[in-house]
Length: 462
Image (cartoon, rainbow, N blue to C red; front, side, top):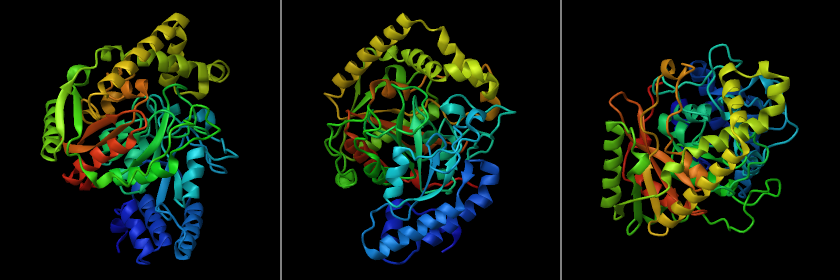
């Protein structure tokens, strides 16, 4: 099988072929390493490649598979956003401040995927400290969008989105404070899941905002995200915010149950502001598909949705608190624009932060109430397709209102998956969100839509 064909297989298919002894994890790892060597010179999706580690992991997985006690992730290549601590492997958080940091421990998510037998290919490019974008002159090159190299792949899990779309890895981990899993998924035409707050441990992941950060899987299909979530989910004593009470269901078990009778709510207020016509058309077509599959689709209203901009007050205040000492003592090691944006968090007062949290609580309550009447919410993931670097590298480029951040504010599970392509050839994405800890329903709805369409099968011309 050619390298490109090997690198296009998903987690489920790889597992089936491994168990049938039709494919070797070592061959698959070698194929991905070869493709990284060939393709990533133009994408810059990897900050660090770990070929020796990958081949050692693959050999160990092969032994486990032959022994018959390997799980569904064994032998599957994965790469980690460079916010995740990896023992003995450089972890930079995309910043000159941590350019030479080699942790002596693994992040909890890394440990869980390694225990599941996944094969570590390396560390993926991230926007500096998961915030902003790498401007010219920064220590590390920015990742590029494989659908069009002149356009961004989204952020801050930029390398994760680019590498998956280009077939450089099968699975990846991202982090999501206001859309950093779903944004790259949307712009790169892949699938990304932000789980419920507390569903997946954040221990060992460099912080942007303590109360908004989420960790989660990214892949090319909903099924692959479900299989990765199975290994990631569950309480972690090292993360006091991780849930102790909620059981972990079998996320893959109900994927094929369909959406007949499922109630889908469309909150048009706020989420459709400034949506581009091609995105609106793709979204309405997706709703038509869900209706044909048996779902009930109707408009709903979230009364306090316009409180969502309070997100910026919370995020910036918490980000400044995390970075305050280094900003005072080593400001020159931050990118100029990122440094200025982080320092803006010092301008908010304590009462402004408290009021923002009160607005957040109201938004969370309203979202929970609406989700009492419907099973999932559906919106465009982003109002438009990936913008060009020439636009976003302007230091005055404004923060666009985010369709993703409200679900960080409420802590709800939210999935991004492809639902079309613009005339430019860039991907368009659908966002599905659900009740707390009900990732299973969100994944089921996403899988049903995905299987009824062909968007997830398209590959960039790279």
